[in-house]
Length: 237
Ligand code: UDP
Image (cartoon, rainbow, N blue to C red; front, side, top):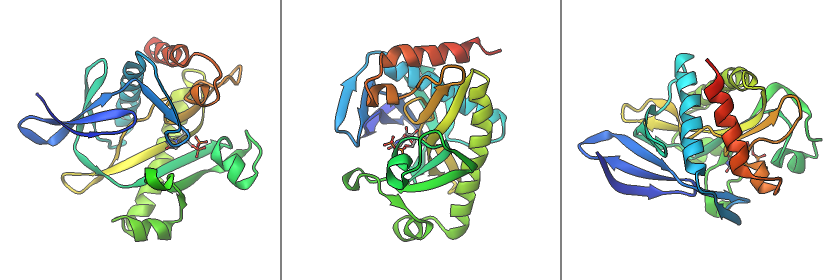
């Protein structure tokens, strides 16, 4: 079923599906990178956690009517998705200040954003994913003004749902990054992954960081934290 390797990124490999050019297989790697690839490490088992956690997120979002590329889990580290062409915009939604926004604008960590803030970054490793305006997105990508509005509204809808989803396992959704892609019908759908690699999640009671910041900041055992999140999700229902 799995065909040839189409593309290899920092966290995933993408394979074709033999006999079906509308679908792809995503294979989650054990590699972790931070600071635009400057800090790297391999954690045996990380691919499984991100595959299974991201699948649970997409299944939940599907129940809530959010269209995504996700089809189904194939095995511990692989999932079947609709083929999309990724739009090179990293859409970041922020509920509380953390990470780059604290440094860029001098905002104190934990400052609450009401309404939640949506930012666009240009997905381009060589340029270090610079922050961009809507006009930059119009200039540099194939999205229209209407589609920019559609993407922002979808990102905020995902935020509403995921805040509830994570609160259900006692985690505060601080911020996260989404990517959207165009499927074979030209429709824009949520793509890529939603995992502790792409979200900031803080334990509601202790405030403990439960995401890739554990790796970025050397705070402890990344696998223990990802295992804890998957266990919390599996304990629901
Ligand atoms: N993020 C991501 N991939 C990136 C950049 C950011 O998944 O290439 C996520 C990150 O994990 C966090 C959110 O987007 O949940 C906001 O990241 P931020 O801009 O604060 O950057 P950072 O401080 O992580 O460099």
